Length: 367
Image 1: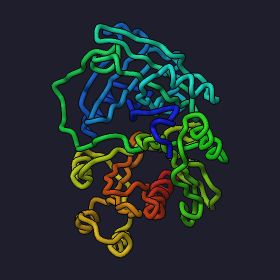
Image 2: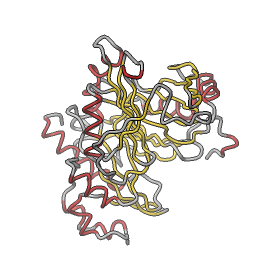
Image 3: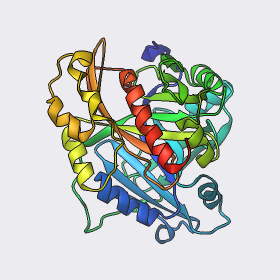
Image 4: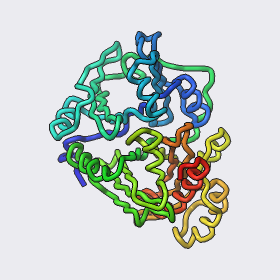
């Protein structure tokens, strides 16, 4: 594990996640209604941007941007036509965006955005960026000399319609799907280019069902603030969830975003009441749950109807649940997670979870 003094790319956390979408105005309404995000900032023709529109939404420490092109020949429009709605950039907060760019590109990262200063009356932001898997990028955001609402070029965005938050706190991890035999090269990228460590590995024996399998490695930065599991398909009798994603997204990309909560039962009840659909594991999953995971603070009889999963590691336990894809293509979905000491990722739930995913794949005719 790196210490901060030896970490050549110190990260302060996830700054924001930007989605390229077909209709940002409608997507923003969905994220406010279903997930309890609050309007924060806006950029578009009214602020001087003639090319695109962006809505920024916030819930506690989670910030997302929903961006749509205003013309069909724009690169953002081509991105959404090819991939559907999806994650374009995972932005990371850094002390020095110029240094982050130098450190990563000198180690082999492909430049996406040369360091640039953007200013307004609230100060200066420095931003740079590198390419990662597929069409996805990391942005490095330096905020220490900026006091504005979000970024220069954005204005405050408030509407009369502001549903209550649902208890989402911060981004726990973002999971990437890559193609056959591409996991280890991307693991090496995060190790060599960004100074991450591989903290967990799951092979196709651990992550498999009767029909499909995948492999996964979890990468973490020096201080543990940023974690990126990377999945690749593995051979099975039928098509795995990663293969389905790659087919419909048109290549590698962000498969799901895990968001932490302090009270998963309360959060899931609120999300369900707003129409968010979750994968459902069979009731039998709960029959021997107490034996599998040991004592937990939550009432298992209350977890069962909500479909919340539990797993334990050496440091404690976690509770987690996964939404169905949040758009028509079976690509991006969300995980809601509550950690009670555990630092792992729910390996004990993989089989039950993947069987639930396969039932959905079968309904879509993609298994």
